Amino acid sequence: MNTPLFNGILIGFVAGVLVAALALIRSLVRRSRRTLEAERRAGAVERLAELGSMTSGLAHEIKNPLSTLTLNAQLLREEVLECEIPESTKATVTRRADALARESTRLKDILADFLQFAGRMKLDPQERDLRELLQDLADFFHPQADRAGVLLRVDVPGIPVMAAIDSGLLKQALLNLAINAIQAMNPEGKAEPGERRGELILRLELDSTGSEARLSVIDNGPGIPEQRRSTIFRPYGSTKPGGSGLGLATSRRIVEEHGGSVKLFNGPERGSCFTLCLPLKRPAVSPANPSPSSVAAHTPRSHS
Image (cartoon, rainbow, N blue to C red; front, side, top):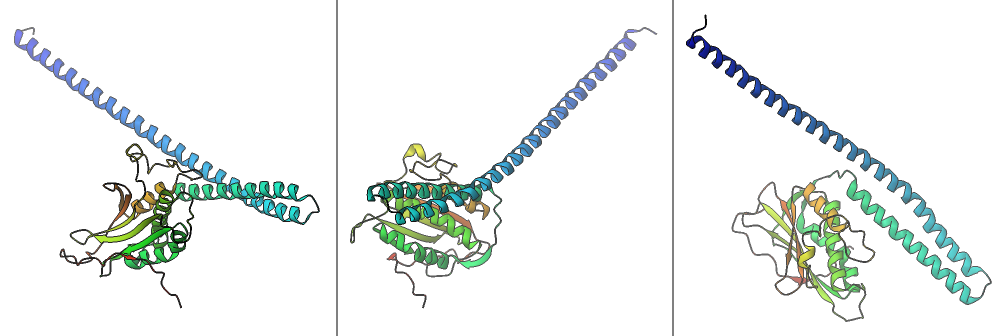
């Protein structure tokens, strides 16, 4: 039977089969591509994990001999001082031994920062009043600020701000920021008695709903240049001589592990403000937040 109607039906059927076949082929091709892409990503993740493990192991292998090197440099210095050799020779050798010990210690610190940043970060959250955390940090950091001629101030609310945090890690994140602030205001790290080189404020605030705590480290140093703001939190983005380049990156990672974020603000004229934003499981207060206590120069607490 070869009628126009039959031919039309046959052509339509064949066309439908071809369209369905093409759709099926396209679907299979897409699935194949997705499968290959997933395998490629899985392979890349596996290679990165292997590379991370190898790098961490290598860092440990380097760190151990550095400890021995530092110790031997110190022993060498002591033996040279006891030897009966010209004073000029003693001075030269001890100066070089000191430089060797100093650089070995710096490399150990860089490796320690790297291992902390690259390793798995496991939090041990405990309920803590953030005001006490900030006060503890101020007590610890006060001597360094005083030595650099920087006035340390603490600004906290008049009510408890409770949060589930890993106190040690969060304190480390804030300490990294405080050290950077001191170095920005006084790169030498020392000041003459009575000399004022800047001010540093450790501030705790709540957002308007009381559901987010904001821990800020504020200085009146030169501020962060615009061209550096997009890269400042990247690993090894430090421009400081002798810096590991991991302090800010580690601080951001610690805060993100707590479910928060870090924000950077420059002052209207000079200075910078790094703010750690931490979510609170329970609002600290009603939306009508009481005013924070006035900013006061920090006086270390007595631990008698």
